[in-house]
Image (cartoon, rainbow, N blue to C red; front, side, top):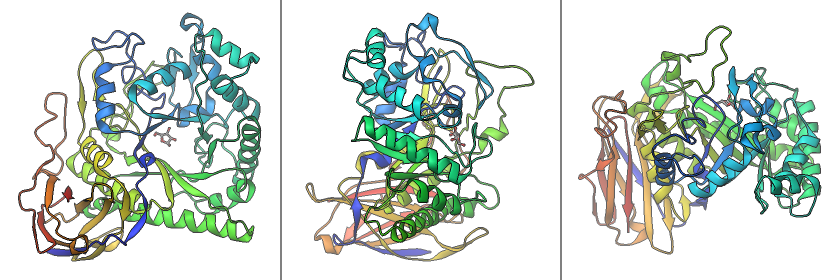
Length: 499
Ligand code: AHR
């Protein structure tokens, strides 16, 4: 099988946005406790942050982190997580049936964010709470004047305002599982009024309204339309969430990016239709603020049982395969390809719970398979995103029918002249020979070509062995007369840097 690809400097879609490489830290399982925060750990910073995890987060190249949830935020009282640690209340977390000690809260997160070199994306609770509590949190976090809540923050030892400008207006309010679940009109009204109030306090905020929890929701499409009819003028972005799983054929799973493309196109069309009907020149774009592969936890159910309310249980700890990593790489290709409409994205999540980084309490931290395509894409996607013209042999999938074996996107950094191409071979039966015509860039040569693949597509990293399968140099890559040729093994993700 073969695929012929063409790229040219004029095929631009939009800028590579750093915000595409966001992640997510929720008070869920061991993401916070024994994930990013473990005061007794050998590598702990004076604040109690795991130093080994901080190093891996920086290596992963994460741009922003959404916090503190997720389903968790819809029952969260932010005040519980600030002030003297020994006075913080223990609460039931109804979303994840756990006990929340509140040892880690807003100020710890912001201190961690500085050390992790990430931008915060904060969520307010629009499940059990509303406008006033959102305003209070905003004033506590960002207040510069001598007002009650800004002074309270100062009394907690944080003299400078945090300056958080990126805010989510609730989480997955379309989902019946969500605490305080609402109809689209109810939520749209609340989101609009919360946004308007928050902007009255601080005008330079970027505000995200909840879109659909998945494209499979019965309300998908209608939800976006109704929410935007209420909140179009008040918000900037609408969220999208998508998790993928290997269930029927591996080929369908490998083609998950097709669903993401369709999801983005549907939400963008809905937003534009609402905007057009309002005769608005404003454009609403997408915050893809939860995306990942998620299904292995079912093989290893949470330790929660009966009436027990554990603290930081091992929940949703997916152990990822090579095929999962190829899907994650493919989803990043689709997110980049949609950079004109997807202005921000967060992989869910960062540590332990459906995460690229795993830890053992008191022990090591290691990279899962999905770490590698994320880290390399975050590091090398630079400049403008280029659409890749693809003429590929196809394969049959149960879910999407005939699908191109090869998918790809490219980026072009005009400053350095570097062109980076990200590719997947979704074929399960064998290698695909790729030729990529880059002659429009002049005399390109290969700076680096790496491929992530393994003959066992279901190989997984573990604490004992996280290094048997790593991205390896792809020695088949060569450029002849401006045309790059390379072989992509079955079920593989690759990156080729040209200059
Ligand atoms: O990321 C895990 C959970 O998935 C989040 O809490 C929720 O928003 C989604 O359903």
